[in-house]
Length: 245
Image (cartoon, rainbow, N blue to C red; front, side, top):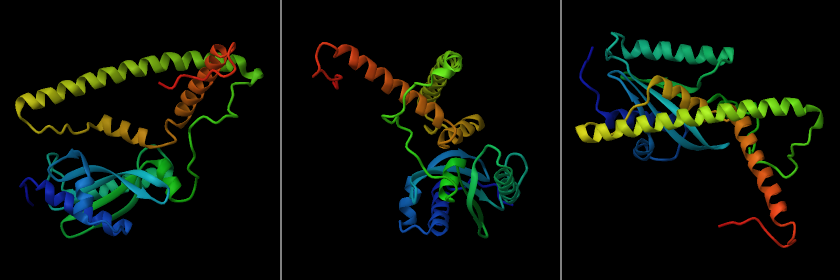
């Protein structure tokens, strides 16, 4: 078993060649390799992300690459990680639990590969659900009179949660910027790998079903508020319009 650190360029090229074959791409493997964004690197495994133009439009994917004959820090070979990773993803898909869905996998003498995507993207690619536009539509209006109490309570809770989420986002951004500055000062690799929690969050955000209702709510609230403000401001001037600059 080898313990020599892998060459990142070779690893990305092998990953790109897998993508070309798995998805029947017409792009050169070298060009695909340049578009891969590293998310995590271990001695015997790597996770990369990439956006590809698919039948449902631009979609995000994760690629797990394993060096089969290499032993990692936990004493497991890349082959063991590949086998357990594939089993975990397939089990999650069969049980419809949260997490990425496997799209394709393959193995060579040296490497194992798993291509995965968010559940919503996977369902759309499989033709199980149509893709939809989350932008607020003209006919969407907050007019359900019999649910006024539900709307009041939900809006209040959503307000509190959004303030908390924004505070957490500020904390994360500050920590990320501090880590980037530290890496620059130390002269180390400027790429900051995702932690496990960050990878889970990224997958959650990649899934259009995860925050679809939230985005639609925000779009609807903003559109409705702007419309009402425009009507109020233009009450004395029928030709008045909402400012665009």
